[in-house]
Image 1 (cartoon, rainbow, N blue to C red):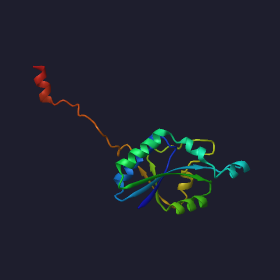
Image 2 (image 1 turned 45 degrees about the horizontal axis):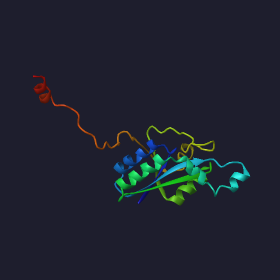
Image 3 (image 1 turned 45 degrees about the vertical axis):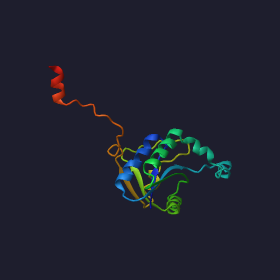
Image 4 (image 1 turned 120 degrees about the vertical axis):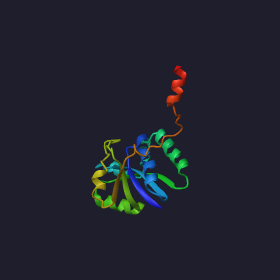
Amino acid sequence: MKTVLVPTDFNVESTKIIDALMQSQHEKLNIIFLHAFKLSDSVTDMLMLNYRSRDYENISDEFYAQLNHYKAKYADRLNLGIEYFYGSTVVAFKNFLEALEVACIAYPKAYNFKPINKYSIDPKFLTGRSGCETMELDIIEHEVNENLIETKMHERTLQNTNV
């Protein structure tokens, strides 16, 4: 199983990268959505680091629903997870990648960093220097259209109705 890290701000749109990854990789994937935070200088914040459940409040119910949709869609080939990285050094990030056994980092081609709070940091600063393979995927190209009805009328049908 290959582990792929996907930096995100937890908007629903970012889950579309799952389809692109599943189509580009033909093995079982463990996809981890990640958001990075700079450590605070406050001693109180440092002591409360283990109690970061409030960070999960940044994840919408729609994001979780979309993850559940993909878990059901690719049940036999996909594991999904959410992780936070707390730190701003490349060494700490490399250790984080090693602990999670990350094989590569995937970004959508139109990736645009959006902080979710004042301590959020752009992960490209860390991923670019980590030495881990990175890939950019076109999520629009890989969107899967489901339950579409063909509405095109054929020319012969149009000619018969106009007569």
